[in-house]
Image (cartoon, rainbow, N blue to C red):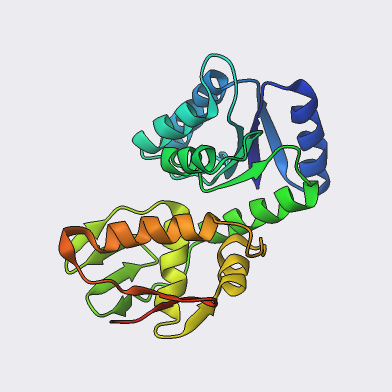
Length: 234
């Protein structure tokens, strides 16, 4: 697996290069967003010309950088149709900052200063979620999700999902009508239980509800107060 680390702090880049290398990852480095975008677009050109080329599998991306910041890198990659897993690094822990990163297209985030074990756990979870699933189309009511093509629809209407939203919806569809606790969802989707103090899950549930309920469609993701969530009809 090859990881692109993007951070304007040379000490952080070198620390992550060593740590990821010890976990048997191949590591590429970029000092800012412009360099990262150029590197990724160059990779895309090579892969288009050579089907055997091995490119980047995930990105560890700092938010605050000169020239092009991490948020803009996310936006440009998603506009280009690039679905690589993105783990964002940020020194800002306000809800609005985290939501901005998720809205820009990041799949997960780690707040600086971070524990290396947490970063590695989140990265492993992103790579697991990026792996192809089985080919069976998942259905509940008028909601469908195809793990093979990563296409989701509701009553025939397409639903555009980020990687994390897709993984979360897939978990619900594989466990219809079952109550999934917050801890179980965190472990299955993020690979780490962040506890009741984290609102990451609530943010993503809100995103999924807005997308699956567009056009006045009924709610399928129900809150089980004090426990978690369940996919069931009202």
